[in-house]
Image (spheres, rainbow, N blue to C red):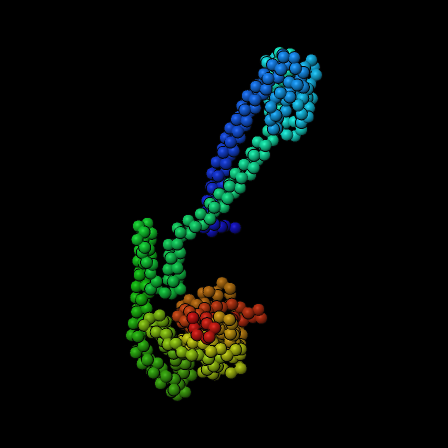
Amino acid sequence: MRFGLRTRVAIAFGVLSIVIAAAVSIATYAFASYYLLNQREDAALTRALLDSRAVDASLAAGATPTEALEQIPSVSQSQALVQVSGTWYTAGVTVPPDALPEGLLDLAAAEGGAQQRAEIGGEPYFVVAVQLTDAMYVEVFSLQDLDQTMTIGAWVLAAQTVAAGLIGVLIGRYTVGRLLRPLRRLNRGAQGIASGDLSTRIDETGDRDLDPIAGSFNEMAEAVQSRVQRERRFSANVSHELRSPLTTVVGTADLLDRRREELPEREAGLIAVLVEQVHRMSQMLLDLLEISRIGGDDPLQIETVDVSLLCLDTVRVRNLPDDLVTGDSPIIRTDGRRFERIVGNLVENAQRHGGGVDSVRVERLATTVRVYVEDRGPGIDPDQLEKLFEPFSRGEDAHHTSGAGLGLAIAREQANLLNAELIVDNRDGGGARFIVEIPVTSDGDDL
């Protein structure tokens, strides 16, 4: 699964924020731990040296070890011990003498003093041993409060790292959203062009980096619009110029057709073929004229339309039975002429290429009205579904049927003008199904 650009940038911002915040947090924790621990040890060492001198002086003055220890000021989270003639005396019972680090006393006896961080009973301590004149003095300082402080600090830094990652994600999404805003305008413009609105343009905002893109898009849209208009004018002009002579040809062919019974069988057959092809060409010219005018200067004529009645009129004009039309009877506002043209072309397509019309069903949904035109044919090759709406597309049965393949193309162009959607698929039981879906508001007005 590939995430979108906005999500990828947001994740990148989040990861980068976490990496930076984690590096800063680790450095902060290491520095704070080193500084606070050294500060605590220096203070403890100074205190232990002062206390050891006081105890040594008391013992030299004849005081007992217990009396000497009692003269030491009580300090929280510390414990004093003194060893005289192999016997230990202590001012507390937090740390027993046999729990002292091995080798510390020997090192202190050899060098006059020693210090060591050790874990006793599962808790951290700082132990200072000082060799006195006739005794060994040991003072133990608990580091539990410092350890708890550093643990809390580590959790706070971890939470800040996670928060920095989340903030980075939010900043990334906001930043890429701002950066993509012009691209969204470009996307909307491209969608407008793709939907057939060739007048779509993108306003320039004064951004020297983005305005060239907007300008290039507008130039492209202008070129596309000009080309389409030229092609439409060309098709219209050619069709118009051919219409007059073709009308003469149609009239002549009809005249010959009326006298066909007077001619030999061979010539009569040729005239029948001629009449069929001439009328086919005439209809093709009419379709070309219509498709060239779609989206031109012919405005929409919005009116109130009874969709069910429109479908009934459509099938009646083509001499089809009324019972083909079923379903709801919604009232909408749209261009009735264009809507009838869409449904009529679908009905004619079913008659010509789909083995006949099976049903014309009207359905009223919450925000749309649908007209289903279903035929009795074998269905359509899935690879050909979208190609059916291209001009001059006649499917696989082109050699069996008449028509130039413009009916569905005209239907889709008319549907686009009505903001409607034209869909085609295959029914489960066989046959093709064309759907015209036109949006409506709750009160029946067109959107």
